[in-house]
Length: 145
Image (cartoon, rainbow, N blue to C red; front, top):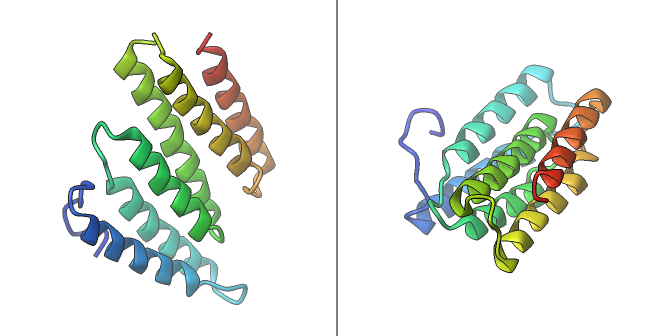
């Protein structure tokens, strides 16, 4: 379903909600007894779905969607890593949108994204990845001025 159908694109909330419910069910079927192949396959399916969601210029709605993803899809490191990278993409998109000339509102949005990333990075088991990603987040924060 997630790999072979066009992206919902955030235009139809019912499709996004239904697909998110399926992703959550897939995630919830994983437990400590699941094989690595099952975990990898579930992670890839969920990442394929979340990666196809695009709310266009509504960056706040996209961040809220990723926050829900973090809340409900916490068992799989690959999904957590992908959520963090998508938040970094939101920061880049916001920076491009305002040409690095932030208003209070856009600066607050970017800070919220950085806070999301900072808190979520700690949930990943791979310590080296954590270090590099914290460094990337720090560089993005310094780029704000």
